[in-house]
Amino acid sequence: MSFGYDQIWNNLPFPALVVDRNQCVIHGNATAEQFVQTSQKQMMGKPLARFFGGNSVVIDTLQQAQVQKSSIAQYGVNLATSRRASLMCDLHVNFLDLESGEMLLVIQPTGVAQKMNESITHSSAARSVTAMASMLAHEIRNPLAGISGAAQLLAMDANDGDVELAEMIGQEAKRIGTLVDRFEHFSDDRPAVRNAFNIHDILDRAVRAASAGFGESIRFKKEYDPSLPDASGDSDQMLQVFQNLLKNAAEAVDPDRGVIRLRTSYQSGVKFAVSGAKRETLPLQIQIQDNGKGIPANIKDEIFEPFVSSKSNGTGLGLSLVSKIVTNHGGLVECHNLEQGTAFTLRLPIWKSNNTERT
Ligand SMILES: Nc1ncnc2c1ncn2[C@@H]1O[C@H](COP(=O)(O)OP(=O)(O)OP(=O)(O)O)[C@@H](O)[C@H]1O
Ligand SMILES: [Mg+2]
Image 1: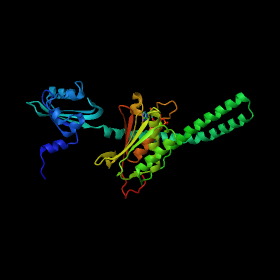
Image 2: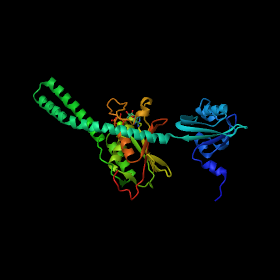
Image 3: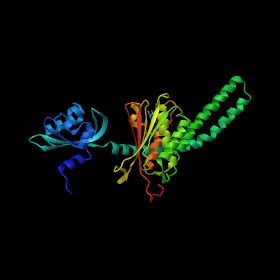
Image 4: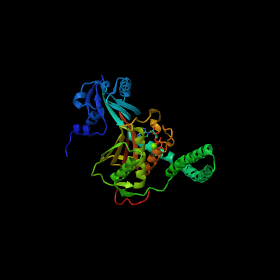
């Protein structure tokens, strides 16, 4: 086998750039080309500030290295380029040659690993709410039935004004009942059954239910990869995941112009550390994208936590449930705002035939 350094350089999975003492680009690998969305040829000789902005932490780090005349690393910095939104990264600057001042800059995106951690934290927060939710559901249901029954009896021989009040009691009791149902769903802690299921069947079921109810006026666009292999998990729980995501999307869009895209694809070779040292391949990627108003900036970092909601009648349990189920499946869910709307991306493991154990 023969290969040159060029080949290694261009196959590095991280953006890497060599810059001169004026911070102008001498080399950029193929990954850097994608990262700054500029061709290698176009990058040559251009100041790095053109791609990252003069105030960027990249420029700062290079300057610090130049002043200290030594290698420097920065962890967990938010990096934006002129053409893409910010991304959590680690930066490494190494001197290649102290005399000429040439430096190697390696950018290591850490966002996905970080999201994975967050997702696990959210799911444990969800678990601690679960016990309370199940207790509440149990304790509220009986007295609630009593209240509704008593209100109906009162309404039977009350005068007109009082009938209205009795009906109001009935309606409000019903509202609490719906909330209790939601809690009960949330506290359903039965273990996820691992079976093979077709993602597209479950997505179709979720779309059918949505079209018949809350998503009546919305256009659903399916962009499925027909060769997608089966997923591994509990299809009923996964249906709940998609129903929650579709409901949120439907609630975020303008009812007359609402479009929800469902996209599936196979991403090979992507491994994630799921619990401790265990690494799992999560090649099934499902994206649910809407053209709605986007996630409010003030709750963007917390939406997977229980009880976080921007809606007057929202419980804030929908995405917490999504996170709990997806994490129990060894998967990953993340979201990002688009220019117009929001995209939720799920990554799930595929079914392997020796995978019959319960989790
Ligand atoms: N597709 C989306 N577009 C814009 N904002 C969203 C979207 N999905 C979720 N959000 C935001 O995240 C918050 C939390 O969502 P979550 O589903 O957990 O609770 P909820 O929808 O408010 O209440 P519930 O699901 O109990 O009805 C929402 O209130 C909303 O602000
Ligand atoms: Mg919701």
